[in-house]
Image (cartoon, rainbow, N blue to C red; front, side, top):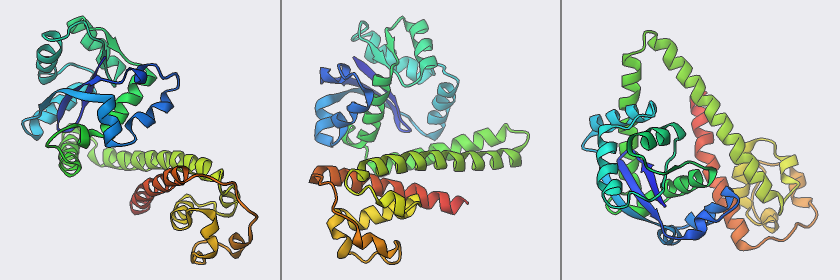
Length: 269
C-alpha cells in the first residue's frame, strides 16, 4: 500500500513496509509503529517527494485540496510516481472526497479508513525523520508562511473581513478548548492508574499537567515543592498503584504536550 501525504512543503508518497500496520484491528494501536524515528523508518519509507516551488505554488495546491480537487502538481506527481510505476497499488489518502476525485480521474484503488487515517497522522508526526533535508524548523516555517498566505487569500475574498476575523478567532479558541479537553482526559486516564486522587484534588487542566511534570512518580510528592500549585493534603495520601518507567515517561510526555496549547489559549482569551 502507498500513502499520499500532503505537507506545507510538498507532496509525499510513502510505502507501507511493515504489513502489520494493515492488520491492526484498533486504529489507536498504530501509535506504537511511529513512537520513534527508528520504528517509523521500519514501518514506512519514502517513495517520492515533490517539493513546492514557492508559497504561491503551495497556496494553489492547498486551495485545490480544500475543494477536494486534484491540483496540477498533484496530478503530475501521481502520474509520474504511481501510474507509471505501480498503478495496481492501493493508495491511502487523508480526505474521502479527494480520494473519490483521484479514483474518478485515474482509476486508482483509493483507500480511506480509520487505519489509514492513523497511519497518515503517524507519518506526519515523524515527517522530519522520514524526509531527508527537511528539518522540523523548516517545516514549521513553511507551514506558517502557507497559513499566512491562505488567511490573506480568504480575507481578500471576504465581504465581511472584520466579522470573519472574529469568527475565526472564536473558532480557534473553541478548537483549542476541545483539544485541551481531549489531552487532559487522556492524561488523567493514564496518570490516574498511578495517582487516581490527583484528578479530584486538582480540577484545572493546566495545573494538573504542571503537577504531573513536577511530581512524576507519586513517591516524589514529599520531595517536590507543590505549595504554589496544590493544597496540603497531597502529601498525606495513601500508597499508589505501581507503574513502570515507560508508562510514567508516556504520562510526562503527554503532560508536556498539554502545556503549549494551554498557554496559547490563555493568550488568545
